[in-house]
Image (cartoon, rainbow, N blue to C red):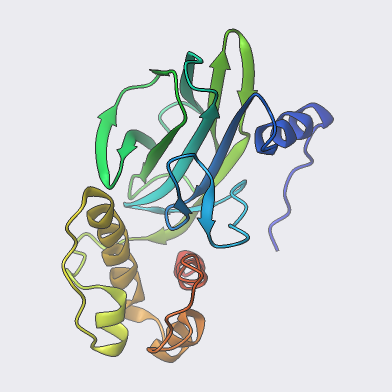
Length: 232
């Protein structure tokens, strides 16, 4: 079992403030599957996954959503800090409906906004922990989300099949992605299919809930991805 390093009281306070919905400004990180409305509130699942020490795969992308909630007209800067520098490639996009607009860090805004965060770890990236910390500056009032990613041993093969997971496991036809967000989710799913080539389909089906799973929890797929990322 991997043991987390102790969190300092100061870091805990900052993290707690980042999560408080009643704060003047808030900063949160969610999985790529969380459904978030225009006001920055999660509509599904009812209890979204806590993103503090997520796993990322080598030779592939792992994606998250960052939500900044501020009162309209409040200027702010959003940074994404990394330590050590260049341990992974960080790309950030602004979500405009289902469209993604590439950004450079820092981003200057003045309204609630949802961002898509792409992390790419090289195929030979060191297996270790890396700090990726979204940082919100509102008139020199800082809120930091202390996320520490775990670069895993799992490595995506160079050639990822152009198949969805449900097609791979169940032979079900799946509509091609249309929007920017759908395309990146499908890209990540195709990486999972490449990792799944040596896995037990029965094990994967059990984790995804079977071929007939149409649950209301959009994050249920993460149970399968967790399993794949732990593979060696």
